[in-house]
Length: 255
Ligand SMILES: N[C@@H](CCC(=O)N[C@@H](CS)C(=O)NCC(=O)O)C(=O)O
Image 1 (cartoon, rainbow, N blue to C red):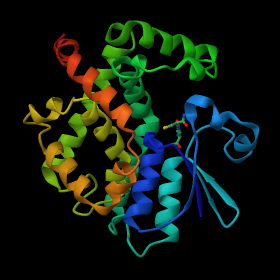
Image 2: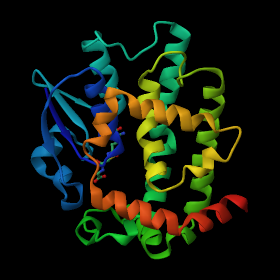
Image 3: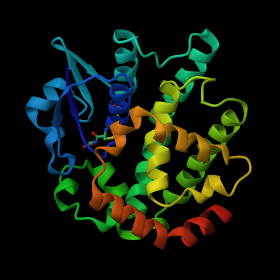
């Protein structure tokens, strides 16, 4: 198998967590998203959406991270990542919809408003559509004061609230076993944690179960799919500016 991916991309992290959980090795092709690698004509033939990840298995091209995760679980069931119970599987799939239903974009908004605006993105900006550019330039120029931040931050906290509620009743999001539901949410909680935002769940009795869930997820072998690829410079930027913005984030949530 071959995987086209990017070190810090949340969608790639999901797929790498599944690969690591199942101890599967792939030939890796790392794409520099900032340099436009995912928009090169040869890559667009594999993934017309110009995004990572893309998996190649026996000449078959599989795109969309959630679809890739289920494909890997179907083709390598020795280490199952889906509950046996049909109701729990249904719950798992609802959690798996969360990133594409908005969470991915909201976390991207926060990442730009807190951290990425302090990195040189001049090459990447040239690749953005007019619409994406307008939204991201607002984030780059105005940070947390950009119009999109407050409503999207609140949406993120709503999702954390749903996680906290589910985790009050079971060890993992879709029941008593670790599943693709946990894999789907993990990169986003890790990103918030890296931006020093864990106080949001740690200081809330409705969400505090997330702390234990995160710690248990990080102890699993699959976490190597995230930890082994973290870029120190990005981690430092997220940490430093996350700390600096903590009060402003609390103020936005308090309004
Ligand atoms: N729904 C897609 C989203 C993929 C996606 O947005 N990937 C991002 C990185 S996490 C990307 O490649 N962005 C590059 C770009 O938009 O130019 C999936 O889950 O695979």
